[in-house]
Image (cartoon, rainbow, N blue to C red):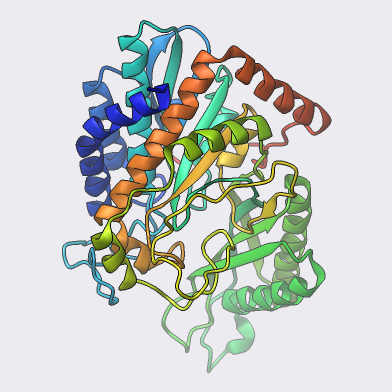
Length: 468
């Protein structure tokens, strides 16, 4: 029996504690930088498993590491646990129904409750296997906060948290099972705050200077910019403060939150500067002032073909997620008319409601461009990194949606999480026991980063916020 299958049996034995952990995180969804209970639940379980805990990694209160073993190599397994605002949904309900037990309104719309628990499960299995077989090497789980529009890992990288890591492994819940070979976008986000002058909008409008006018003019300018930027770039925004509810008062304050994405950090930074100029122009037109506070950012992913090929071998050895007829019947209730899955693969009529295969790849083919972003990108620029995705929800389920939240505690989601843990654990053990594999991965990484060194997207002086 192979090491991968030995680890798989061990993971099946351990799984109930970790599916319970993922459910507990789902029940108490916390937003970026606020994941105190989520982090503590992970720490409590890791400590009970005998891991050595280092809290507040890089000065980030809700980041931590859990380490076991000793010596080299050091293999990291990355976990996340933050939620998204406004996505509360009753578990298992295919109709839009916010969870009546959820007072925050938040929801695990990207499956990070599964992500963190599954990664810790993989790390625990590797820890036990090393101990039971008297093998050298270190496995280190990283609890990573604020992946959603804040990039907690970028701050951890900046603080040197991954400097001694030989390779890094992670996963993400999805609607397909595959090794990720994608190019994601670099991004930067910022608060844009306009300050004007209040006055009576009817009696003395000439005395007022409208911050809301400035914010609206900025939005118009950014919308015109969209025609004149690369097609893979993206700009999003949310209006956080429109200046109040009184229309007869010239609004003295308005605030928006902008996210700017581009294929790499250099292009992202250039596009962000164009957005900044539009904000300054809007302030000039309205005789208001503008403050732009950069909140964080992340780099595009740097792939590693050596690690991807090795993980693909492990995934093929394990096969697809073992769904049963009940899983399929439940998933049919959540099917949408979306023609593509999360990774752009066309969903054909008659396809299984749950992906029941393994998508393979051609190592020489161009990488697929995903126009989303992840702070795993920054980790990938400082240590060789590989990721997989396993099917946890029905085909075509949109990411960042209430439909994904609704499926996050179903047996299919648990099975996808456990399967990902097996893939990650097997991949980690390959690196811990095969020095030649790790050497090749590092050589590829060094060749690419020598030509194009890491360029942190964080501006000087930007730090992670203190616990709120």
